[in-house]
Amino acid sequence: MSAKSKLVDTTAAGAIQDADLVAAARNFARSRLADVVRDDGQNAFEHAQAVATILEHVGAPPSLEAAAYLVDIARRD
Image 1 (cartoon, one colour):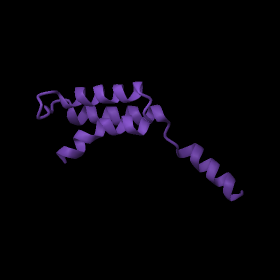
Image 2: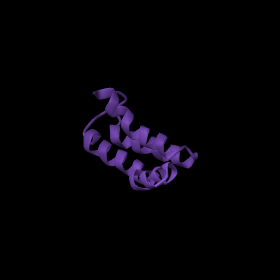
Image 3: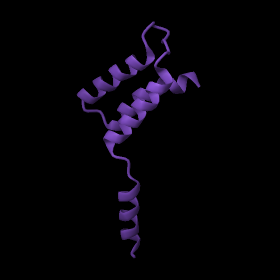
């Protein structure tokens, strides 16, 4: 098997699809932020969801949408 074939096989087998990345970040954030209130009084998960939705609507890459869900977790830890 050539190096190129190995790369393609590995990439195909291990790649996380964009929707899966956002869903995984959302699910992780939901479990960590559901009961967290931000300094501005807003529920942390609801805020993250709103930001991710805005990012999706303006055409941001899925990795940035996923980051919107994770930033408040990083701030807490």
